[in-house]
Length: 535
Image (cartoon, rainbow, N blue to C red; front, side):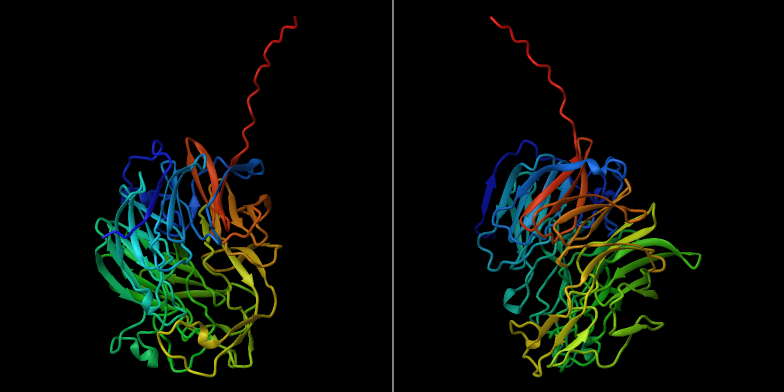
């Protein structure tokens, strides 16, 4: 039964009547941008070439849409057939992607919680998004009318929802946030037609299950949220999803052990939810270094042999290369220079920790800081250059811990502990060779180190990224040379996309309160002056 809601209609004439299919999503991105990462593999690389290194300096704003009452937008726009779908807290809007004109808007006015929202998903004639109080909502994407709402979690148990839904064939994959409050994370698959739950995979084992011995008293309450969407390999029908930090964040206390499956990458059978393998980046994490950054799927040679890889830039400061079929650890490389909690990783990929780097009640300096060496900022991969583009942060923090063991399932963050920044830090866009993790070039940001925006790569040879000074920047994909920038006037917490409407390419990004769309400058055609007869 639907809850009370508000639907605002503006215009329907331009809304597309077509059906988005699984094959359409597999072919994305092209003129459209059909998943949060553009494609299933998380490459965020567009084949569009109209905007390129030769003309990107001529890019100008085409339109701006100010989202009412927005603050800190995280939305990653979805574009299909000239319509853009954006989200905010408990609401979704459809815009004309060429002009920014509002087509329709829907807001759930009865949601019991507010939280950030990272985007929508499209499939068939529907658009899907989650509300903060853990409902998946399906709407007719042509009109914004509600088709159904399905509750798949409880805020009373510390969970809330923020991740963009992820379409795999006829299933909608969803996750939950709230890992800092003692909830139990999970990934669920819901029917795209009815919302019925088809399977659920928990990221913290139940008592007696394999892995439960790694939690102590915190089994079933350990966090490991799933607040960032995953990636997918259609050939093996495998879903790749990262998990969040264990709870309490900075206090290991009575959760002795590795705390499976927190701070991990899970490979899951998309039909059944069965875990095929897992890889834990940071066992027994006490620094809030969750693994929720994008797992990128690549087919590349390693030591002269073709391999199916999943690569991952992790908050703990290392860049990982894994075999995505088996989960075998292949290699890790330092992602940042400021890394002092481990000297490296061993042959199985386990960190070689430096003693004395855990948080203490009086504070302990550790690198990287609590924001991590990277975060949810989207990386991208350009097959022409062979480079992976990753936003990184060079920073250390003073980590403090509680001296008490907190009780499970209370609204609580970090065991009464936290961090103090040792320095402001510096964000740097790094181009990596994903076969080795070695750095090829760097582009340092010059702002106050407050950036959460990622990248998009284009076949035009340009990488677009939101920097920490309120600027969308265009950079040469080959060498890191600055080509263009535009200051949106505020911070950006989402990653850019690119799309095409009627043969014209656009680059769009959500700032804190608005969505900006850019394209090439088009000189006005000269209009003959009318003849004036003087009497």
